[in-house]
Image (cartoon, rainbow, N blue to C red):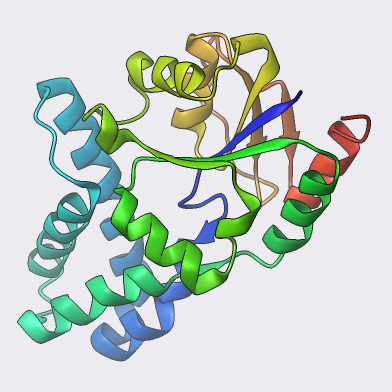
Length: 223
């Protein structure tokens, strides 16, 4: 049976759906604010993995937010910080998510959610978007306390789902995630929603590149 592991943030969950609240709080620099927050969030997770100094992803998200607020001199008070953190638990899925999850489930694919996020936050997101029923399991790196793209994370995934690398596909909108999975032999599908993003010029390349999750039904139509 085909086993599909979906990254969450930026793949199923649209992190830009928080923009209206950011705009309300910081005004015209909302785009810059959102980009810096996300980039610093990823940077902190990479650094934590290199240091073997794990903290929950929600704490990393808060620390990245505090940094962004200070760096851009947006002067958010504690109430503003808390409001954005709460909004991060209310992010929306992309428009193509529910349709493709239903389709793949009807084809008897095993579906797994696989994320750097901590399980409590992910469960809240899934419940808010009513997608938890489509997944066989929700797998968080908090169970092994190291972040993607460390090799141990993907090996843990394979063991957790009783899979094998050549029959397990990772679907992600993050190139670092695709490279990390490819490094341990997983099949990979990169979703480039912008249609013009540059993939890192490394020796690891995705097996497939798609622009919408609906294209997965063509890849797995015989599953």
